[in-house]
Every structure is written in structure tokens, then in C-alpha cells.
Amino acid sequence: MSGRPLDVLEASLGERVTVRLKSGDEYVGDLTGYDQHMNLVLEDVSIPIETSIEEESPVEDTTIIRGDNVVSITP
Image (cartoon, rainbow, N blue to C red; front, side):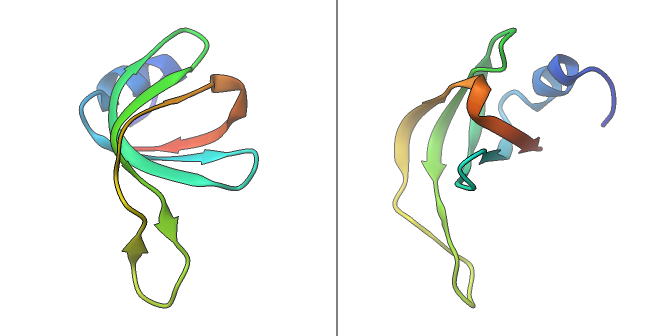
């Protein structure tokens, strides 16, 4: 997947993505919306817990992430 960032977000709508924030936190969820500022709307969000086995924290229904805080989005 290549192209302009908003094109990549458009192609990722409805897909599971991992979002890394400036704070180092990561959110994994279904991308259901975004805007030109890269503010994101994620559904069914979980936060990975760093352990030797793959675990995740409980799921949140809807999370809105301000684009200024985003470092990376991995489709």
C-alpha cells in the first residue's frame, strides 16, 4: 500500500489498524473514520499488554484519537 497518507487511510477504512502515539501507547482497532487532520475514529479498540505472550486489555467501544498525537498507523 503506497500513496498519500489520506489515500492509505481511505483504503484502510473498516480494517484493523495499529496506531502508535507520541506517548508510546498503542491502540489496535477497526478504523471507522478520519479527517484531513488525521484525527481517527476506532471501534472495538484494545490496548496490547507487553508480556511474553500476546495479550490485550479489555475492548473499548469507540475511541477518538487526535491526529497531533499520532506517530504511526499500521494497516
